[in-house]
Structures are given as C-alpha cells and as structure tokens.
Image 1 (cartoon, helix red, strand yellow):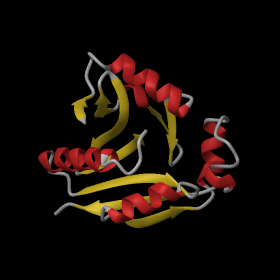
Image 2 (cartoon, one colour):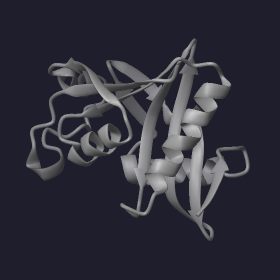
Image 3 (cartoon, helix red, strand yellow):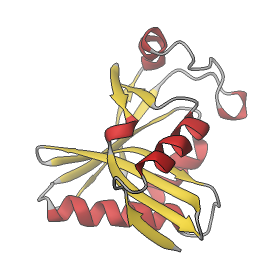
Length: 158
C-alpha cells in the first residue's frame, strides 16, 4: 500500500476518481457547498490505480474529514488514511477531528466508532437543505434507507 499526498502531479487523476465515485466534484455538508477539487488529502495506490482517498480541511483548531473512499474494505486502507489525517491534525495543533456522514452509511457509522470517534450531533432532515443545493442527492441511500440526516462524529486529540 502506497500512500501519497494529493499534489499538482496527481490532482487530475484524483478529480477524475472523485467525479466517478461521487458523481460530482461538489459536495454539500451542513448546507455548505464544498469544491472537492481543491481539498487537501491523501491517496492510496496499488500500482497506478487509486484504491483509497481521503480529503480534509483545517480551519482554526479543527480538522474536518470531508471524504473517505476505500475500494477494498477490511484491508486497512481507511484506517491508514485516517491515521495520516490524525498526524496532520496534530502537526497543525488541531484539538479535534470531526466529520459528517449520513444516516444510511452503516459502514461508516461502525468504522468511525471503532477508531474512537464519538457521535456528537445529529442534523435532523439536513439532506432536505442539501438537495436544494445539489438536487442529484438521492432520496434513498445504502440498503434503501431513506437518506435524511447528517451525523457528526468527532475525536478529541488533546
């Protein structure tokens, strides 16, 4: 597993990966439109093929994980990427890492709790607002669960 920082050398490939897996390079989180093509992050390769990607942003003393994709589950890719972001957050003297996922993302709910993240907030019916900004967000998510809410997780670093 080869983890690299997102840079100008791999940005085009990263943007193509984001577009193919998220169906857009725009994300809506808590009613804010986020351009994923300019986010910092890490990418995991197997040969020349991307098998994992994590994007994040740092604002003040908080680091927010914006996206995490692992194409091969239970191989340690997601954990390795989260650990890289924890390192970066600590290097930038962040006191907290947070992230948002949706109520249908059962794998993420399990994954982040196992890594020590706690559920901190529920944004009830947040996807109603997000769909006004990005109408392509589906009504049904994973396992045909109605896609309605955003759940915020956080991890205190110090």
